[in-house]
Length: 322
Picture 1 (cartoon, rainbow, N blue to C red):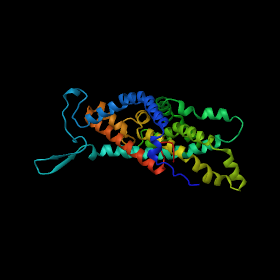
Picture 2: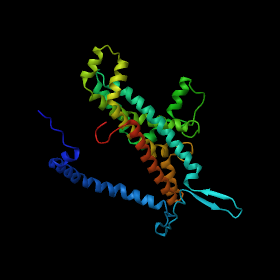
Picture 3: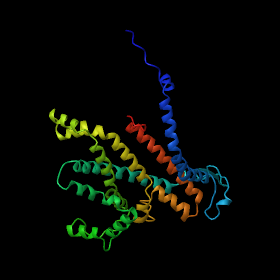
Picture 4: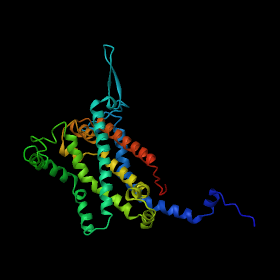
């Protein structure tokens, strides 16, 4: 019997009116969400990009003039013949904020992913009171960031903070430390608070992935003589890697736009100033609305670029496949 050749992809799509109907229905259901997203996010983003090419001032936005890329980079020709370079791309304060943000993101996300993995593996095991521990571990993440920042600000206070008291009693430090004001410890203080707060988020996502693993695969690996480390490295980790990468992307995006924690814990500190804090200062405090809009636009571009790179490196398919 002669085997019939399968229909080409285009032919199969043309002969599947049910599929086409489902696609139309999907777009119909997604349309309201897309319209709301365009109004709530797309329009403000477009306005921010537009303002970054003007000389807009918060005092009178209607008096703006188009200046092109001057807020990003411009060359000033001096009478002496020298050229002065101006704009965001040559602003050392901006690049310091970029470095602070990237360093904060890399360290915090790495620590939170590692600790989240460890805690998730522990909570995935069977032990008495596991439900209570799972609920308790989410408390730091459930507390609003502003509340957490103020709480830790008091704890880290150099005069009456409990952190200094405990470390002094243990003999780990010889004198009280101004954790959030000292240039050497300000970033470390912000990282400690963020890791304390965000690790439960990573734990929750990784634990959800672990709960979805088929128990049969783990049992087969044990029967084949694999030790716990081999099971984790060769079986568990490859299976949950897509979920871990999604969690890393979400957390990295959140860390790259960090604002509230730094703004409360270390205000006006150049050693911890993030890109979001830089943009906010220029938008509202320094009355350089166009310059702040340019910083916000670059922040969005950096987020978009790093998201694409992370997805490519992690080989994550957003359509549900690998």
